[in-house]
Amino acid sequence: MPELEIHHESAHAIDATGQSVGVLAAVLAVLLAIVTIASHRTHTAAIIHKANANDAWSYYQSTRVKYHNLELGENLLAVMGTQNQASDKMLADYAVQKSKYEKQQKEISEQARRAGDEAERDERRALHYDLGEGFLEIALVLSSLFFISRKKMFPVMGGLSGIAGVAIAATALMI
Image (cartoon, rainbow, N blue to C red; front, side, top):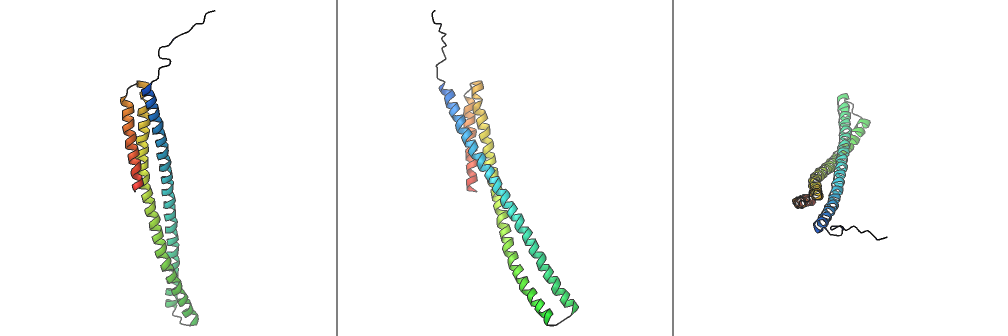
């Protein structure tokens, strides 16, 4: 029984352009993954800094309440007009505590401001990562359209979009 061979002219032909576009798409996918991870980590850092700022401002408010309670105590002693050893001791204690709370308030408010500034900086960085991520996603889709249309303009546009995405994401490192 003779063997039947079916010959296909393109069966073993190598599509160099298709391979190049496939490599381009793979590189774009890796870059997209890197920028996406950086974006997510930066958003998380912004949330943590914002939470730290909120906690610090809450702590600041609690020290302000304590400070005002000491002022209220001083005012009550002044209104009552009692001048004895116990009231003098209490007023001296109030003065020490007020001094402590004044110092704490300055430190806490500075800490809260720093955490708020870090959160804003992280949010600006995250925006750059997000924009870079968007351009890289567009680049990947455009490059993939080559396999449907066989038009070389799609990987060229994808490459340009990819370059723009990487450049925009890289600017986040300078913030």
